[in-house]
Length: 45
Image 1: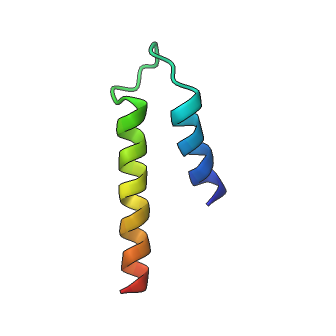
Image 2: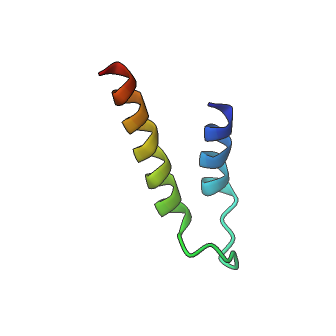
């Protein structure tokens, strides 16, 4: 969970336009939260 927070925070506060990553920070955050909620709901199901 700490790693998830670090990735989320890095996407928000460490935005580098020169990164080779083809996705923007907002896209990465959206994917992370989508996966997080999918795992959360699958565990509750």
